[in-house]
Image 1 (tube, helix red, strand yellow):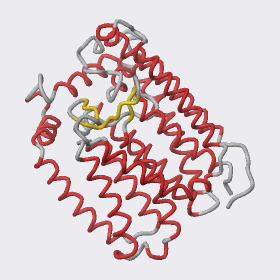
Image 2 (tube, rainbow, N blue to C red):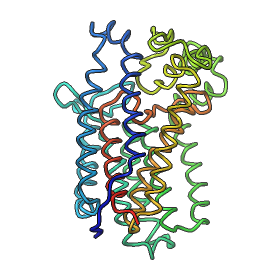
Image 3 (cartoon, rainbow, N blue to C red):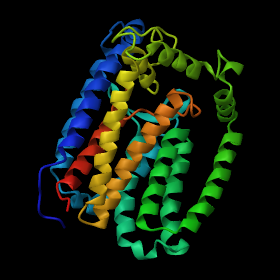
Length: 365
């Protein structure tokens, strides 16, 4: 267990705080009209986001000051609890349905999304398992099959909600960790083929997913239906130009872009703050990813390397998917933009994960 400690990564903290503050400002700007119309309170979404931001920062500071090796002994119980919650949320009358997905559990006036916490629990488990079983990772029977088998069970439970976006992030993050642990390339080629066939099967099994693909290729084919969101997103980004229309001056948030404070918040940010604002946010994410990769490279042991790799991989995958969807490079998936999009579970989870990353940075070689 690493003993020596240094100061946490300052650039990582700075990038995180910048993104968090920008996120709070944009959540208010994007949601004020929607909140006033539905709840007669322009600050409705901002107040809830600020609550989870404070909760997340407290969790980040706590995790930053607790040695990451502490979580090694708690990995299994954490994973079991997350599996239990994924089962509970599927029970009719218990899980809350939003946007066609039964993915939330009500906790008082708030709700949590168990699938978000499963992403971090799976990272912690795989970091422990792969660091202990690395000599078996090149074998299918003792290395690849047990790890991917567990991941696919979790993916299946998430798909029963259904929530393809969150499930895809968890699977892709796990694949990155397994690759870094030393799995063979030929196994990944095989898995890639199987995964592609499975993805096609998921699309065929749900007509709305196939419609999303068709709408992605030609959104104008159904401009008031499945192509509506991407068209309105592009209508937001286009007029933003270089400097933007000005903070609070978005036109698309006036009931053109549905719930703009969530998955499409980057579109509103680009409309109001322009290319400069969007480029600044992407730069902050780039700094966060760079520092995360550096932490993974210089972690004192394989356990820390794999944990940091999983966390930074999760961030990178979500950022790339969300922004690609917003600018029309991918079909709509329902993935939040880390630290910016409205959503208590996502925000708390991401800040907690950054806390773990910061603790690993305190033990870097």
